[in-house]
Length: 295
Image 1 (cartoon, rainbow, N blue to C red):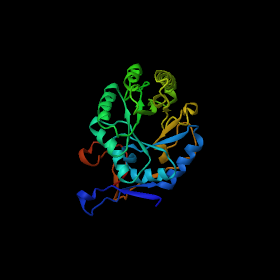
Image 2 (cartoon, one colour; image 1 turned 90 degrees about the vertical axis):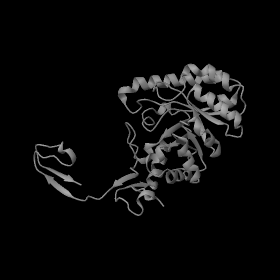
Image 3 (cartoon, rainbow, N blue to C red; image 1 turned 45 degrees about the vertical axis):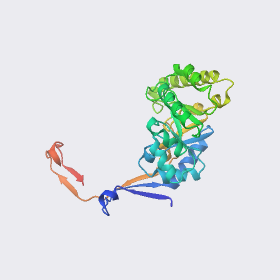
Image 4 (tube, rainbow, N blue to C red; image 1 turned 135 degrees about the vertical axis):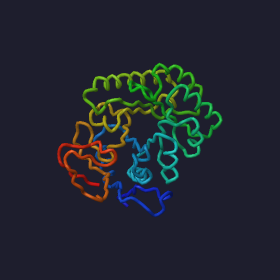
């Protein structure tokens, strides 16, 4: 099945009633877009970002398609998104970018790999891991290089090393950062500064973990969909691609991506509104000219 129609309906609440508005995901076009991105980027691999339950589409169907196409990593925002993928049969590695401590048990239960985002988060995770030694050994570290959202402060490196070096049952799989304005040429100076900050951070981190390959052998990634075409020299080891899979054209490029999502509905009524009159509740949008409105 190459096309998935997602009805705007909650059948648990509405019985057999549903809206005629629908969102359709064309999986063949997603596969086409993935191939184009892979052919263009110089990174070792693509992390398919399917957060927001597949950006509001159908995360299980999307992820199974990408899994068949050989994607080696998925990324989701929260643990419940990863749980849903596992329950649907997805076997590929899943990075959780913001796992709340209260959800750590499900990391273990569903073989999900946590991103650690701060010293406090790390300390809570290590306490939990000491009580759950059978949990996956793979962790990911997110560093703030200038976006000032999630991520360790780069000044935390020495404390991170102090906490992790004594441990033999943890591997740092990847280290990554988020870019604040990779899609905008106006912000290129700041983006380049973020790259410089991240490069220095990774070098410092490897030096701090020297002699401990399970900690120093990590992969790196920084680019998202907006950045992969604009900064080809900064593909690092992996790239994170989300909305580009749906055919959103990349910044400053014409890669031939195909829109894979269509939104459809049925018009109930077309009405002409006279000049000076508003419409609907409040009548606050009057215009000096005649308008044709579709409902």
